[in-house]
Length: 419
Image: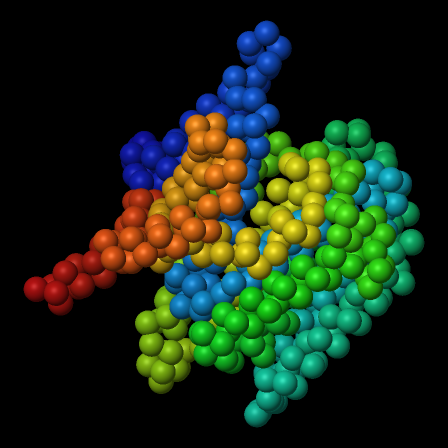
């Protein structure tokens, strides 16, 4: 009886709808008509791209829409996740497990040191932000220094363990580690960047994140000169990335992002994130650690972008720094504003519509060259949105599953208080 009741609830409808969507798209991608799928590679790529850009935008909505911190750095973390995961799988397919070993071991050691450093700093009083940043930075450098030194034996261990498995299983495990490693590295860098920069006001923080995106792009242009990654080929673009992204991976990663964000916002930590957006001073006066709430939202949003970068990289099988320049960082911001700040539903629908319409349907209808006008059309759309519907297309609306529901007793108390 409880199972039937749950299936009739908003959670049940969401699960059934998600499963139906997965099955329908999977069928459309199967070679059923004369050995060819109903959806060709063009539309398949758009669906995967829509999922990736929506994950990036959900992260931005968490940072800006729910936490109130104006950011233009999402594409920087998107690029970090893409290049990190691509480098891991590229090296693995070229019989070099060092990338896998360094990323996995480096991330694990960094997180372990962060736990120890955090416990140590809690015992101290009056530690400045600069000192905290320096300690965490040194811990990160130490962790990855050790990871690089141990790359050869750990990589050999991975080869011996994974080599005993079937090739298909090994491929999926390596891809999983690459995705997680890319997202985790994006989160670590966002944590280090956010510690000092989140102390700035929202406008100054936005300028700092824009600068961060530009720095990442310049570094990617010089990965084969300044940075020791000749396989990334710098400004020429990275080729030879294995095309391992499939619809099940896209769907599972996308649903993970949605569920993590939904559950985070419904938790006590989520309430602190929202309270900081409403009034930082009031939140601080009632005992909320404003700095930690900002860092939490920023790191989680950046992890979402890193995961999306890994998915996108292994769909395109090619990466170029120009795809991550600061102009591109406006795309998630426009999607968030159009869908509605603080609305997961608006972000999800607008993200997919944005890609399927602008990159798909309009390319088939309008003549070539219309792309050069997009940065004229975008401001006009935003101006009309500000005038006609300032809250975005969906406003604060959320589908029932994503909406926060109060327990019956608390709901009754709130209703009585309103009366």
